[in-house]
Length: 488
Image 1 (cartoon, helix red, strand yellow):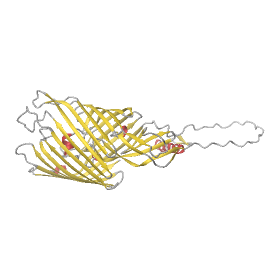
Image 2 (spheres, one colour; image 1 turned 180 degrees about the vertical axis):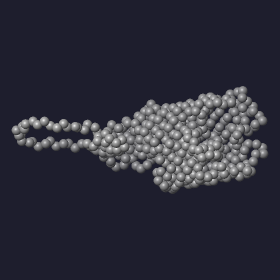
Image 3 (tube, rainbow, N blue to C red; image 1 turned 45 degrees about the horizontal axis):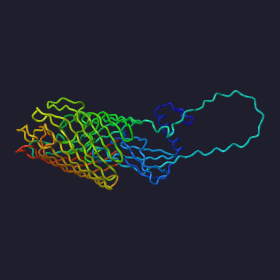
Image 4 (tube, helix red, strand yellow; image 1 turned 30 degrees about the vertical axis):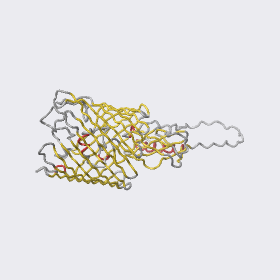
């Protein structure tokens, strides 16, 4: 690589010098001006498929709102850019701590405005008196540098690779009461509780995303060895193709469309996911999603294998039919909401008839200054369930129901406090190994963000559970976590 007459043969140095040349070229073309306007994320739950709308109120560019033409992923942040008529605008966004069935983005800093600098005219040279021509002398060969770093305009359509990740390391104290000799000790102690490595490729229309989770080996929360498992339960690998600024398709294995609490602990206010997440919601889907969005509203349509399976899978029910779903939502800087539905055919408890297993999920949330609250109510109707009246398999049992309220207050960029309340009724698990007549849970969490890489967290969650059955023993458990969330 050559830049300003310097030849760089080392790969690492070539990247550094190339970046320096590109910045130098861009700074020659555009000059930073006063901040103006606003920007907002109108759709997208990951950087490769996010869409940002610029509003140019108070800016030198006279234009209606426009969608960003380029998105640059940088770990947990991204930059959105728009360029027109000699003006360039840039906005930066960061993933917020709270989520509601998708990723919440918060703007970092003001909108940056750049104005194109026109080249100064070169003055004509003064006339020079003619002199007699000198005899020609053979000249030494001249090597002209024809390479240059690409300008900002020429790189607008280029693709980009990005990598990031996190690790959630905790000390946990878990205790169980009223279950005789049952102890929470196997779930207590120091643990690598969650983590992931992310990678993405972003082109003009096609983007690729992979998410490789890792954590301690555990069955039912109990560890019996020091192994670390990779890709378990919530791995992602999918392609997104953008047909239009408002319409895209996603194919592969990806996070669910439903629920307030997200899969990765770094995207939740509580490191330990709640009972609504664990009892009623899918984790990932393997299939396809069509996404249409406009002016803060969106409609997503899903067709996939049964939830949390890489294929139709083997089942004695049988439960091996294609699943269909949709999510209709709207969000702006103040309010957000979503209605979601997911269904697939499944055998009834009799084993001789077909029914429909369904999830109906409602979400409503608002953010006002430093205060934020999200509410969720859902129903899981499973005709194969036979836990509430196990001696009768011909009746239709009541749908499991769940409720969640999650609120937070952000004191400043460093300190945040959150509370969570949840309840379950009518055994939404629908599984003979986890029969719950009703359950309730309440907890509090506190975050201290040291810098962009390290966040310290502590939380306490108390849960009370009543199993199904006439003489069932009600039991309580309490969990205290103290941990560090490291992002890279």
